[in-house]
Length: 89
Length: 476
Image 1: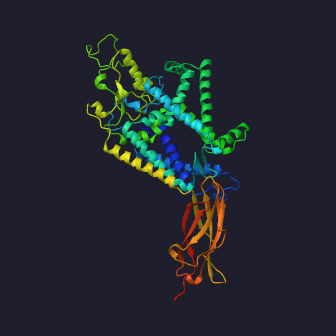
Image 2: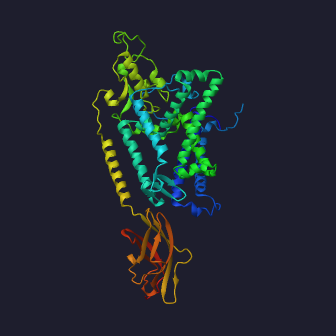
Image 3: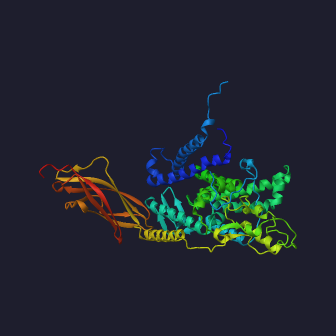
C-alpha cells in the first residue's frame, strides 16, 4: 500500500487495529451476553473451555472488524493515484 | 483529520515538512510540586486499587471476579448475571456522562490524573528515571554509541518494565480467573493456554503502551482527545500560559527589572516544554495534545519562585478569566449534566436495590405444539429455567395462572410443584401444563407462570407464556 504522506504510518496502523479492537470487544460482550458458550460448545469442538470460546469469539469479531477498517483505510487513497493508463506520447 | 479545540490558537508549523517528520522521542523531565504530588497520589491510589482488589476475599470467594465460565460477575456483595446486562449498559452511560460533566467543568482532569495510559506511563517514567537518571543523561545516553553500561542500563530497564507488565497482565487475568488459583497454576507451570495467552497479550500491551507508545496513544488512539473540544466552553478549566504577562519572552539576569527592559515575565527557560509528557509548548496556546497533567504549572511556578516573580504564569484558568470576564460555574450544560447524572445514578441504585434475585426463563418444547390425551385434555410441554441469583439456596413453589386467557381448567400436571435451587445456580425443570379441550376458545392463549421462594414471598417472579391448542371447530 502506498504511503499517504499527510498521515503518519503509525497513525494509519493504529486507525486499523485500534477501533476494530474496541468494536470487537463490544461485539464480543454483546454476543456472549445473549449466547452461552456452553450452548455453542457443541458447534465448535467438544471439550473446549469457555475461556477458549470467548477468546476465539473475540478474535473472530476482531478479524471481521479489522478487515472493515483496513478496507476503509485502503479506499481512502486518492483515486487519481490509483492505476491509470500510461500517458501516451 | 485532527481538530483543534475551538479555543486553540492556530499554531504555524515551524517548517512545512515538520508535520510529516518522523516521530521524535519525548524525554519528559522530572518535576516536583503541588500537581506532581497530586498526580502521584492519584496514580498510587488507582494502581493500588488495581493490584490489590484482585486479592480481596469476600464470603469465601474473590471479592471482584468476572467469572466468565460461570457467567457471573461478582462485585463485593453483588452478583450480576447476563440478564443484568442492562445495568452494565446503564453504568456505562453514567460513566460517559460523568466524563462529559467533569470535562465541561474542569477540562481534561481524566487524562492528567486518572487515565490508565497516564497512570502506567507515569509509573514507567519513574522507573526509567530511577534507572537511567535525569533527562539530560537519558538524551546523552541515547545519542551515544553502544557501550557496556548502556546495554546494562537498557536491559535492566526493559527487564523490569517487562516484569511489571507481565505482573499487570497476570493481575488483569486474575479478575477473570480466580487469582489464587492462577497463582497456584503458575507456581506449578500449569497455566491454561488461553490464560497464558491473555497474560502475555495484556502484559505486552502494557509494555508497548506505557514504555514505547506513551503520548502517541493519547494523540493517535484516544477518541476522547479528539472530541473533548465539543465539551469545552469558555468557562472550562484549562491549563494556559498568560501571554499578556509573559510576552515578550526572553532570558535575563535575575536582578534585571523586566518592565524596564521591555520584557514580559517568561524567561524562556524552556522548562515547560521539557517537562511536557506529550512534548508540546503550552505557550503556543491550547492544543489537543495537552493532556492537562499540569507538569508545566509546577515547573513554571518553581522558576517564578527563583526569579521572585509571582506564581501562575502558567496556571489553571478559563478562557473567560484570561479575557478578564467573570467566570460562571453554573452554566446550562453543567446544570443539565448534574440533573441527568443525579437522576441516572439514583435510578440505577434504586433498580439494583429492587432487583429480584430470581429469574425465570420459559422455553417451549420445540418438537410438538401440543398433544391431546385420551381424557380430553390438551397438553403443552415447557422447560423452565429457574435462576437463583442469591448467595443462599432456596426452595421455590411453582404455579400456573390463567392470566389473560381466563382458562379455569389450567393445571400443572407434571413436574414438581416445589423445586430446590442452590446458591447462584440454574435449574432446568421440564413441566407439562394441561387444559380441558372444551374450554379452549382460541389456538393461542396467554398464560402465566408464577414462582416464589417458600421462605420469602417477596422473592417472586411472574412470566407470560403461550399455551397452544387446536384451532377450535366452527360452531363452538
